Length: 366
Ligand code: ADP
Image (cartoon, rainbow, N blue to C red):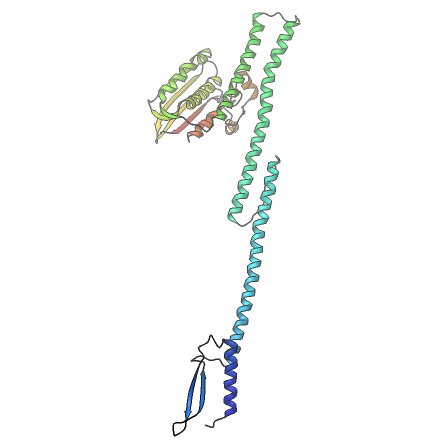
């Protein structure tokens, strides 16, 4: 092998350049050693300095390769940053758009406009749940608003009818058209009683609404509770010659005594109200599948099949003119249903027109 000095210098120079380019000389494990050169008489005739980069040194190919790798890594970094920015914009658009829609809808609701519904699918579960809640809220508020409007019209209508009748009767008597005899005064008195009854029922509803969520649970003997209500309503039943029959098990249960008493009063009053003279009412209470059941059965006028689903709605009356004569304003069953719901119970209805009705209250027997 021939020693090519120039070639050696070139290779060493190139390595030195590469090493300087890649690694700071001070930081690398570059070492230099100084050796003395002696002649045969052991005299120092010169020095030789040998530098070494350790085991690792870079050739031109290595440097090119590392430069390429650096370029690729930098490009990947830039692409990743761009992708991240793109995804961030996409996500923020996906969130901000529906949030804007929801916020607009909330503003509309705030202005009392409940007609609109959000019809937007964001593909984000949480946002979709929020949209659903806002739609529900709007529907509930719309329902309340309609109820409030209906309540005002119904109340004014209900109050106006007896008031007009009283006014006409009294005016006729004042003008001397009618003699104020007992019969006419009684008729005016009946209207006043009807009016008082109406106001009492409204007061009852308002009282119930304000105390709605409170339940005063206490141990109650259901048989005694029903017997008490029957006793207090016996007079009304006797007036119509209606026979009330009871089959009551002596059951103790944890209930809100006043509220369940109200349920029994309303169901029994309805049974008496909607049963013709000489009719029959049967009340039973018993335990079944860990539930307390109270059944009210009458052989009265019954409810048409298509009307049954509405009878628990506020101010709903199957036949307005019929109820006018009977004095109901259509809130009795609304109160019944709310009280039973509060007790986590249910109520079942079976009824046939001109045959009779059956209401069964089912309460968890606590
Ligand atoms: P109301 O004050 O008019 O009785 P309710 O809310 O108690 O109002 O009842 C709603 C409607 O359901 C009544 O107007 C009546 O038409 C019908 N209803 C309730 N109970 C009976 C029943 N036992 N027999 C026939 N119809 C009934």
